Image 1 (tube, rainbow, N blue to C red):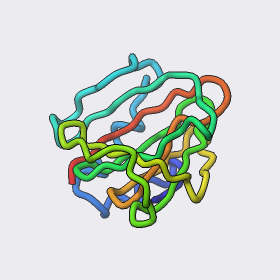
Image 2: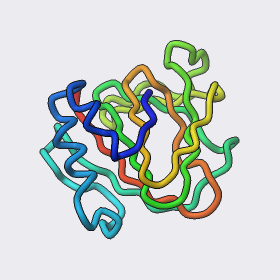
Image 3: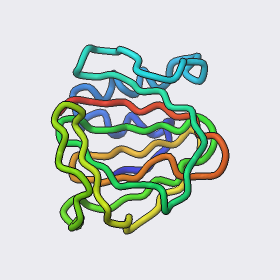
Image 4: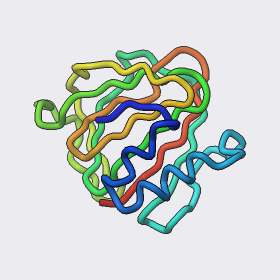
Amino acid sequence: MILDTLAQADRYSALHPLFARAFDFLRQAGLSSLAPGRQPIEGEQLFAIVEHCTGRMRAQAQLECHRRYIDIQLVLEGTDEMGWTPVAQCASPATDYDAARDIQFFSDAPSSWIATPPGSFCLFFPDDAHAPLVGSGLIRKVVLKIAL
């Protein structure tokens, strides 16, 4: 798991061949005006999901993980206090892995909470369970899905 600002994103470009393209997308003008939902970038290899919703309480947040995609979650408005725990420490699966949706949920509580303000992002690898969209008020964010 990585927490950083968009201004420092270039330091992570060498970690994956699509990271440079992903961060270029996140720097584009008008990102805040994108409608909620899926936004194509490079087919199934790289796409965005725009979210704009009211944050939930920590108790309502459920850890999730993905096996086929890396997430880069950039907060645009509000503060998203994302929960985190290593998948290896998750002992209570709430669901089986859903390959069609590339997601599995856990009943475990996050071991850490990361307050992510506007202009900052969390980068979650497949071994990072995360519980997003926690906070008071509205949260607008862009989640990039980068294929492994």
